[in-house]
Image (cartoon, rainbow, N blue to C red; front, side, top):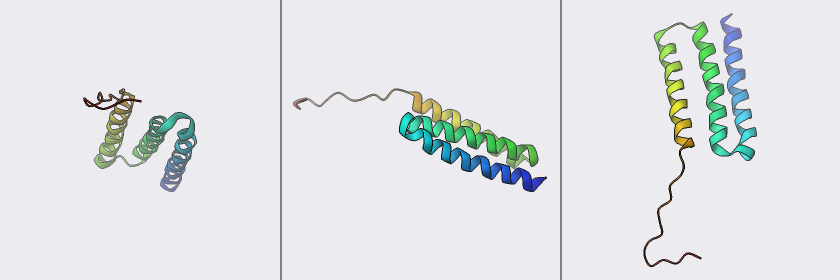
Length: 90
């Protein structure tokens, strides 16, 4: 059963990379990273269901935290500084 789960995890990670690359042209890097992190989270949770160790639990929890931070950071608007005094804007 462990080999099947590992194969499924590898397939999910590969599908996540392909899906992120497919989303990249239309949705930009923010959407692509969000899609990739969703697939990585799914793979981590699937692996967690098989290996019930503290290391696996911590890895899954860190994946969730990183995903939340990345998506929150990407959703913040970009602030541009005003032009310096004496510079021309054309």
